[in-house]
Length: 169
Image (tube, rainbow, N blue to C red; front, side, top):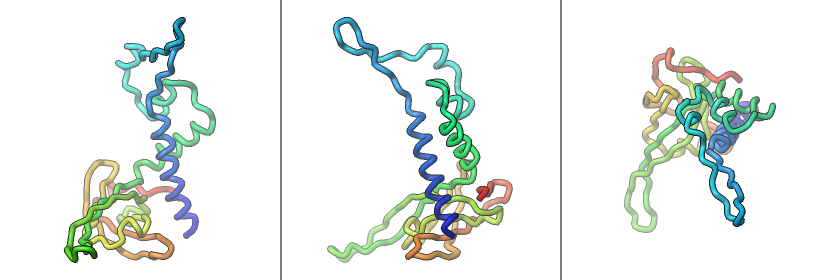
């Protein structure tokens, strides 16, 4: 169970690290007057669309071995990561009124039967759960089980098996 939790945390960290590395950087060039001007990317580079994340990052500078490993892990795990959208009804204790609340989170597909692992706080109190797959298709999901204290939950989505890419643990 600890390995699964660690995998979920690691996948999120890798996604964040890769995403931050993709931000375009424009290095300032000092001039004779001491002011800096931004470097404009070459026009021909802007015309060529990168084919992968590695190409996109590598266009700035060569990747280190650690960065190459991170990109490889990201590209391997990305099809297995899902976006989770939730809706719930919450009671405003101050006014005593009900209001609808929405939440989001992520999870990882465990098998082609549609089981998904996520954190319990992502679905806590939700009365409607929707899963968005890497294919950008959305499906409703249900809570199969969870442990609030360990902050772990398993969902089940009813999607075609061909659209589900289980993560390799």
